[in-house]
Length: 94
View (cartoon, one colour):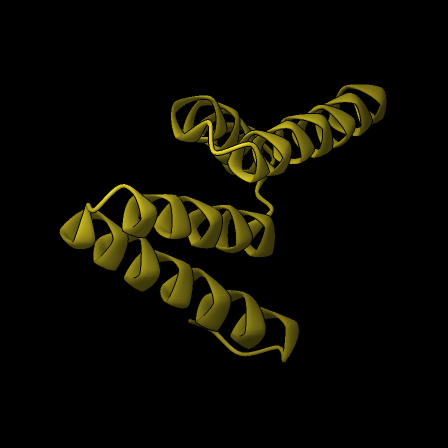
């Protein structure tokens, strides 16, 4: 089980890095696919701060593509994830 989680952690880093590279190359569609894959991996292993960072990256892409409403939803999701993670780290209930 630990090896599977470790592999997923490596895989999410790979997709995240590929997403950043695609974004730098202005390949918004490829970047979105990579970040969506990263988001799925973070969700599956319960890494809230990783989910928040990935939502932020998807928000940035949404803004670049002119999808303001989608970007706003992603921003709110990222904020909620960050707040919950910070509360959990402080030993509080969200």
